[in-house]
Image (cartoon, one colour):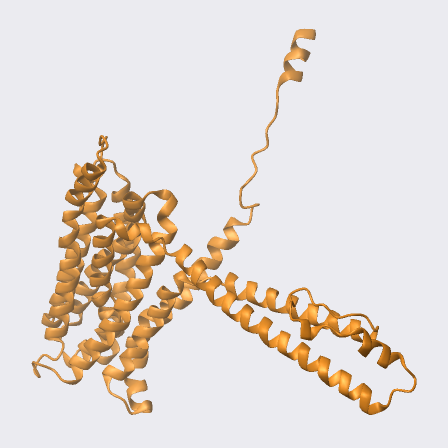
Length: 393
């Protein structure tokens, strides 16, 4: 019995604590709602707002679609921004103003004014000035002269401090931004190629979302059925993220090759869209296929980035990629709208825009097959023994 008690006393019970304090579900739910609302607005703008905005604003597709391109571009491009520099600026600025306020307080207490950051001799109140202020025989003009003189000195120091603070804040912002963008990542040729691929993909990624309804109008699809097309993209997207995401977890499957194939098939689906005719189900078929593979592309991007640059550099790498994605979206969407306004083929106004930007997506997948070779060359240049690389399988 005593032995049992000794054993029980030696047992240490450990309580597993959640690193997020148990609030992780709130973050997940909030993220879901943000994407539910923002992505819903972003990807349905062309279906809902294209023609109403053209009529109300009196503008063509090229101008209106620029708005459609800027919304996701700003969202993606804001990945590099940080608020800390502006916060630091406000804190420093307030600190300087507090010092000046203390200086004014010392004036009224007849003390010599030497602000913390002031080295200017003209700012110091002389003993003669203090004695004159304390002299009962001093006139109002004498008091006014002293006050004006020292107020001017304070104003000069204030301006100097604000100028220094402004320059410091600019340098701080540039420093923070340079820290956020890891320049060393751009020396990795494989990662640079991945950036180029994502740029090419994003040139045409939003086109089916923004112009599927307008394409259906040109093809004379029934009005009450046109909305089914964008819905098909959404359904395909949800399913594709799950299925392709699961496939990417299998060790026997090369994730990079899967990613490349997904992009190529999404590009092919985009190119076939203008050939669907007036049958809504053919439009829904291409839309579902595009949504399926484009969803897989989105789901695999972060994982591929981790494979390329390592887990510790995922966040700065994604920041760079999102910035280029945003730039490409802002470029590609209005170009397609303008090409529709001035079609090369009046009988099929969207034929060439979809072919060109569908080809861009296909090309974005093809060029990534060069990554294994680039990685091998990079490792050989480092003259380090290469263990195993999953991209070489």
